[in-house]
Image (cartoon, rainbow, N blue to C red; front, top):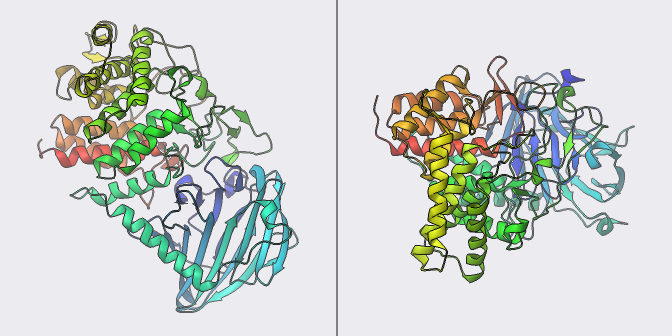
Length: 604
């Protein structure tokens, strides 16, 4: 069945800061999870074309290649269909409203508007709950008013189209658009008990039109707060909108991506569930949004982490569910074939139990930035921070799994050690600035010991570069992050040497970087890592090498699709986007590099 699957880059994201969906270029929703990012899919043929389910709206006859764009400053998708008889536009969104953080509508809205002539379209709603295992029980409750129920999931489906059940008990209709006329399809996620025996009446057509306008206004208000001057500004704002969409409004958690098991290599086993909140990724997300003036998310995430860890370092994890859940047990769904046959499909993520020492540095740096904006930790949070810094002081000599979550044995990763240095450094600064009691002498001694160890055991004097781990000759693109946290200056000759070595040795093709080289105990090859290439552009820009930085930046940005959405990885041989999509790590790295380019004067 692999021939049926569109390229990953053919998809667009819509979401409401609770749920997300992917819409294909041809107008099919092939991935959607209600009511949260990590819920079981109700439309999921992205991971199994026959079993997963979908909701499509597409012309019945021959049509030219659809054109699509986001309405400026929003996450409302507009897809234009043209046939020999006419033209229409399909608007797709999750509806938004003021106060929706804690009272979302939980509805997906699709509106087709005629532009010229007539276009005949077919709508097909095939709900498949629990990742395709449960075929929905569909019932009609009135004209154009249906429910679809399966176990603990339910959808209410309504609108203007004359939907009827087909032989598979899916809903289908054919309709024709005319200039200025609209046809609407409304899908609402509901509690099965609340709609049995009868769901509430659906909104009127006028109400649905108002909700589209309300959604456009909501996104417009939010995005208008962000600003980056220069030619890179619009694309950076698009990345910011993606990151906002990946933020869970009720809790402040930020998911790494809205999908699971999109492969890093087609047909291989490098398939992971990214619908969870990594402390590392979320920290850099709020940092990137802050650089565009979008700072409100930072405190929400800080509080999410404190709640999730229950204020205790002993229970701190590297990642959590979007509600703060700790048990993210990884298992495989054997009934799904996976995207283009790339099994297994995984739910949960075993990396949640790994030791990754960098988490201490990310949390302390987040708090330091929060303090610099005029807020300081209260007594309860300071006790939590004391424990974090103490943990960094005690545990930094231990090996860990590193930023890339290696599934082999633990190692002494330089990036992890450097982030322990960051935790100690920020703890010392906070204690001094906030006049808090702290074992500053012990922390300084530990901070100095970490630096000494890195400079002695994590440095290759022959090649003039930092290395991936103590005693290794391997390089790691994560070393490009060292100056962003102040461990070493961007223009320090050691960092310049490291940047050049990484650019030379990790270049996989045409200026795009791999994360690392060497055995990672996983089958198959991964593609070029988009975020790492943006890290290289940021380093080059901060080193005053503007022309080189621009070349690398443009190459990384060229891996995105026509909507500016970035994947985790990229195959330069085929031009395919790979991995979970869209990827938050790629988008916030794009913003950081764009800001660096805007900050630096042009040079050779």
